[in-house]
Length: 340
Image (cartoon, rainbow, N blue to C red):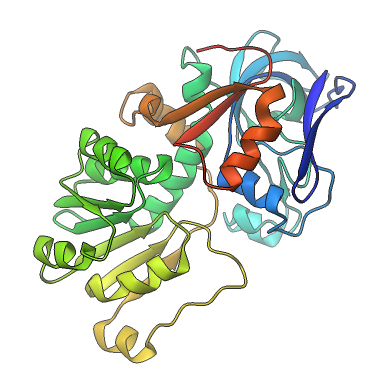
C-alpha cells in the first residue's frame, strides 16, 4: 500500500509499505478522507521535537477493514472516525480527567503512524461509528472536537461580545459554536476578503478586514471592548495588538498555536488592574462524540470550509504549499480515491 512520510524537516515522499496487521485490541481502517492540519505543516517544518521519518495525519475517517480478536464493538464494513489521542487512562492525569496531559500519551501522526496512508491501525477505544455522516464531513470531527474543548473552557455567556481572529476553518467553526452558545454578537477579523464573506454566510454580525484601520472598526463595534477574544491565527503580533480591545474582565483565548520560542509583550499591571484572563486550551478532551453529534445534527456546517481535494500522490507538493500558507481553507486528502 501507499503511505506518505515526512522523511525529515522539509522533505516528504510516498513510500510503498505493507498493510499493517491489527493487534488484539486494534482496528484496521481503510482510510477514506484525511484533513491537513496546521500541526502537519509544523511537523514538515521541523517546529516540533519529533522522531523522523513519520507518517502524519490525524483528522480522518474510513471503513473498518479488519479487527483484532479482542475487539468487541466494531466489525468490517462499519463507517468510522477516530480520536487520534491515545491515552493510557491509568496515570494520575488521566484519572483526573486530564487526558490531554497523559504521562504516557501517544499521538496519531507523530508518536505513532498517522492516517496519510491507505490503511492504518488504532486502538478500539479511539474509534467511533459515524453512521451516515459523509467521510469528508467526518474528517472535521477532530478539529471541531478541539474547538468544543476550547468552548468548554471559555464559553461565551449570554449577552457577551465576542471577537474571533482568523476566518479559516477553525475560526469559522468557532463562529458557529459561539452563535449557538448565545453570544450577543460575534465579530470576525481576517486579511482575506473571501473568508470574511464565508464568515458572513455563517452568521458573523460584523467582519473586519485586519489592516491598519482595523482598530477604528473594532472601537466602533464595541467602545467598551470584547468580553471574549478567540485567537485562531497563532501569530504573536496579532495577539499582542489585540489586548487593548479586551473589555475589563475580558478573556483572551489562545487557540491558534504560536511558535514555541516566541514571546509577547504584555503589561502585568494591566492584567491586574483590568482583571484580564489569558486562557489556553490544548487539543481535545472527551469532546469527540459531541463534535460528531454536532455535525450529524447540522448544528455546525463544514462543506464550505473545504479548499483543495487531492489524492495521496499529490500530498508531498500540497503539504509544502500548506506550510508556505499558499492554500485556501482545508485541504482534504483521499488515500483510496475520491469519496463524498
